[in-house]
Length: 436
Image (cartoon, rainbow, N blue to C red; front, side, top):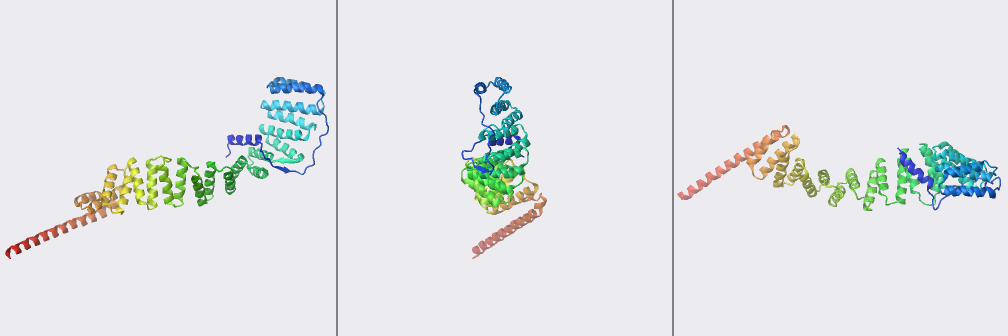
């Protein structure tokens, strides 16, 4: 939802900003002619000038009193318009926006001002109604303005769009704001951002993404725009585009904090590009952009494992192991070493894992099982059988453990028989040699 604070910021911009190159819409209306050509009489002007000076000195109470006194005199229509206009400015300065609008209306209804002042007063009247949260009255005076003026500036349409925003009529605001943007002769970043917000509010995500592309072309150094566009494409299920936006922003040097780098790693991982994911995460850790926590080193290890980069996975898991509070990471390391038939390293990792503890029952059983097998490969049959007996305590490992124990015991017996046979044969050969 649009927050009140955001709306106020947008309103101030639309109300006060002046484009250096403002575009305008030709209405085709006939030019207004003021009904008379009156001006200040000399006596009234001298008094009016004095009240102007008071206002410049912020003596509003005194200026108001004097201007009200002037209204009691017999004034021509131009003088009535000017006096009411200035009283309206005092009301506006005091936050009495609706009262100010009413004074401005008197000035307009006098029909004594030149065109520029007449129509300018109508815009100011609309602004006062807007500030006083009289939104329908604001629209009514704008329509009157549109019906009389020869040209409508882009910023006036933007102002009207914002009136609809205040009324939460976002659907009505969108085409008017598009018209304002289309008329402008220079890029309008804030108007486009308002349009983007309105599209999101109306759940028009594809249109919002298009506007965000425009915003990036206007201000390519604003990384929030790149992040928003990536999120928009992701929500539209255009995952490759979402990733491409993040990659471009990263290559442009815009991403320099942990959250952004992690997001890029996550997108590579999500799209099953593990090597790129690992490269991003590792660089972030090595460069100090990402805090080297246990979780991040574990994430890197898993990413490299998925990419079949086992050397890198072992390095990452090794860093995670230093920070680990249990033996799970060392168990992962042992699995890799086991697959590589690096038996001593397998044994070392498994011993560390079991000493740290914290393994699930089935993993603990498997760890003892693997340790027994590694000890067997290292010709430590006694150690192997001891480990396998512990593996047999786990239901999932019990059958395999006993089979291995039987195999090792049979192997030991076989080796013993072979040794005894070889010994007997050696003795027999020695005896035969003596007889001969």
